Length: 237
Image (tube, rainbow, N blue to C red; front, side, top):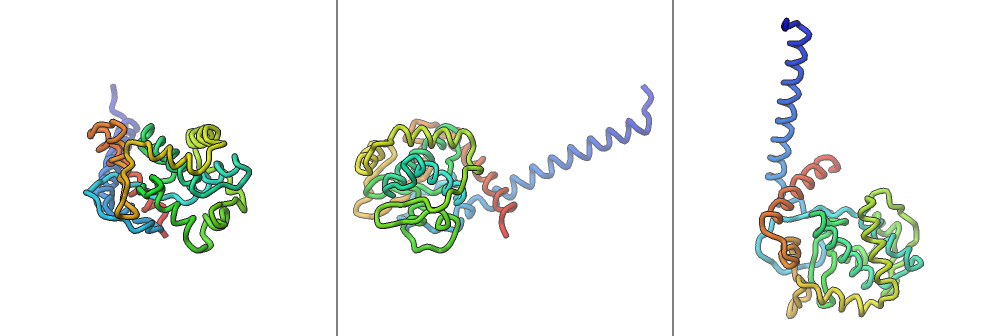
């Protein structure tokens, strides 16, 4: 076959593309390694928690997704819900997503409190003074309840996310907040934080308690680091 100029140019272009792909992949790996230890900081600090052993499985809290997930659950209850029940439902949703896909829905950090596990940043959104952020534009806290003041939609949620949230909303539709506390107290990863009020609950411990092996947990940690690094680069101001 004659090696025409067109063929040589095509091969040269393919080599260049291949090198570019390898370069991008290498950059992402370096960025992930560089920032995986700090990417979990995010916008919200969450409750003060006591130190636990080192753990690389971290996620970035996505406030808009958290608001849309909470709103979906609240709509199923007429737009108003006891905030303890909401916290437990959101934890169950993130937990299930973590176990099934390696990624939670909201990306919030897990903590154990006396009433069971909760999502740290979501807890702060509910309990803190309004700061006119995404959460406060759509959801307001009144004593022990939260109510939906503006529908945020669900465009940031996948079909999988909506399915998980809808199933939980239906399953626990008539449940009281005290029943939801009993539900999460029965989970294998929960530990009573006394005498501390809050104890960190690493996502890796949730996976281990559910019987996940260390190799799979390590894969989830690597994937979460790359995902967080890319998001921080793309969406940082």
